[in-house]
Image 1: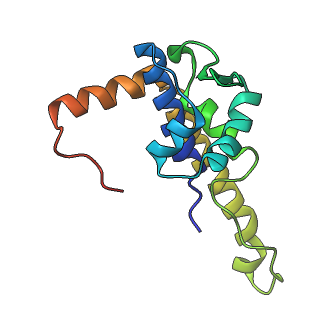
Image 2: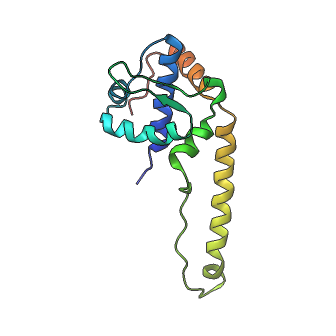
Image 3: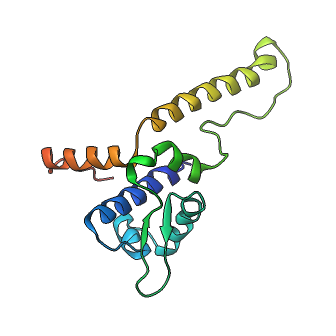
Length: 151
């Protein structure tokens, strides 16, 4: 099963950043409508983002969701690690009996490979901020407004 927590959280944070930049109010209902999701799912996704200071939510009739700090000081890596937590990028097989040289060593080899791949992914995400991502999206939309993603 694909884990969609990161792309969902990224979309949420980008929508919040856009609303912040335009002086607009953002709520879990607005985010849910944009995600075509249930507002309770959005609120569940907000928990780690709030815990880690990426977003701030105020309650009540006039409540709103804002970024916890400027968009140029929030990296995509922070969003990823906030919502994914300790789940590895790639899961290895459980230990298998060491019946040959491959089965005796495949587990540690895959763990090292997965660790290296995850670190490379985190390095890429650490180089990009929410401000960078929002700028890229808005720029692309101006250039290619008819080539929006359907999924």
